[in-house]
Image (cartoon, rainbow, N blue to C red; front, side, top):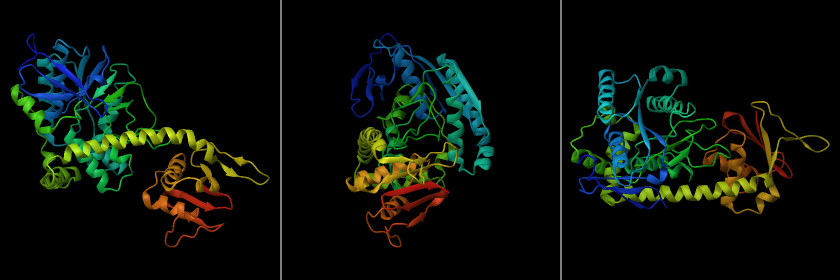
Length: 395
């Protein structure tokens, strides 16, 4: 059913965990979108590949704008041609151009060289393409052309992301998966570095505007039903069937097995991600309050005091052992990680355990928490136990 005078949209808010439910009057299909992510008058740019998810998001926003309970946003679109898949990618661009022309949606097209980025940065093809895509989209925000970039990640994407993070040994913030909204396009929150990580690029700092994911509460099958009910076709990326790519193996091999144990596993993983994000938001606030009380910036110098260098690559800090002793194990671990992150290091579980052992907390084979003991970790991070402090510095 096309949007028009007879189309009615009703929003049922359950933003306590994420999206809202959007239904049309004919029940020809439904999408879970989040009007709470938008403000009246927002200029919203849909990142569209031509696939089912982004095509459905564009149509849903156009229809929601035309409904009685209009979103009241200004919709545009952006397409990134990654220079991969040859003629197939060219056809994707043609499809998107024709769709946007039919819907009267302004379109911006970017052409990027993924292969060159991959070679220069020694990244995998997926990572290189993602970084370039977000760099292109990010450029629309400071130019003042849009207020929000809308990406079409679904609940299925969320479940897959959480599983991939779990398989790679992510911390709790990694299990937060894809965030429904992120200010700016700095998907990984800065500051202490303990904010929720989303599915996005490694952006330093932040820019104006925000990224929103209005479809995080909808299943991929519902997206396709929504399009089929409207007679709308979509493009299929052949690389989505390449089982050399980890996400595709998770999608096509692992997730079907998990659903055989519990058909609701996707929803449960999405719920876990929401819980993890809320937990991490709480701890981020606590650490911002607590860290200045326990973190001593700079290196100690003879005669007392500390030397703090602002030169790039010369970071150092210390944590007082007695203050660490007063904390429970979970908080100690977070504080040590936050201290390292303040110097630009992201510790994994093993590295964190080694530093804690150096400070005298817990056993780790080969590491003794004796005064004067030192430890060398990757990327030039060094640790030392003094009588009163756990000292960290960059070699």
